[in-house]
Length: 447
Figure (tube, rainbow, N blue to C red):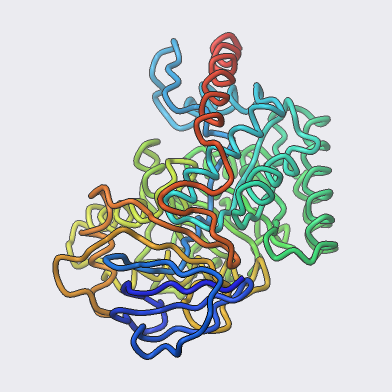
């Protein structure tokens, strides 16, 4: 199929904003990008009028928890948590233990629908379901990738908190998934070896996983120093800081993803700079859990690659981007503490480079030869929109102002058209989700 997108502003994320632009998609790739009035007349299978719209590369979420989707609105009867560990024990570790194959499936569908309707075309999901571990990543793939068309990198969260049998099942789920990915030529799927966090992983478990990581030549996807508990446990139980502990097992690889990185000493940041893993910043989750703020300027000064995730808090990455930018200003106490172009690298450069390395295809630019992962935003700029100020338009104009996403393409296929996800009865998905959420909530409250 060939598609012509014409008449809108194109931000190619390669140095240009094209006014009255045109994009030609053939198969799964972008083949032409130019001004609409310069395009030669051809026969296209479909043409889409993008007048008064902004065409950008599809967005990447570098860390999320799709399993948390059905927690929205859940009110627990216990007293409010006083710290991060109580949030984990009182909510998330109850929720994940009560997930079933059905609730995993509907969580993937709801999350996928909302990601796509927010222009997110690629996700890195970190899954946990101790009561339904085997085959859980395939269930997520069936919904996200096969049914909805979201490019997805998946992993299973290994932890010792539920006993050795569940630890072994989590390890096996990662190994099975990574085998599936390595034996597939499908550039829509990827994976890392999933781990919860240092403070729920024993020495024996980390030694075993380190051997698999080396044999498979793959990175890990793990929470790092999100709460003080991670550092306190590492120091009290192992006599070393958490970065040093993970480094001793060879887990701080360039292809590893370390999520949060809040409570880090300067010496730990220096180790990260040397080992060059990928750090993922999750500002809204960090604010919600009151765990602190990652020192992005300190990481940037060291040349550490930092991307942007949402840790399961919503589905809108442009709003996440706005929140993360503002939060750094508050944390540093200066409005000039971090420039928007520099901060823009998190979502609009580093996330794409992570995705390119994971899926083995060119992503993140609207230029010929790149995969056609594209979001068409219903945003008519009231002021001039140029390469110099496009990030400002996204932060101060698009975000939070109820501008919907009109259309989305993933790998050259339209997955959102006229504001609706293609080929899915959204009402039926949400009705099913509501019914399953009621039973899940009852299980969580009684556990």
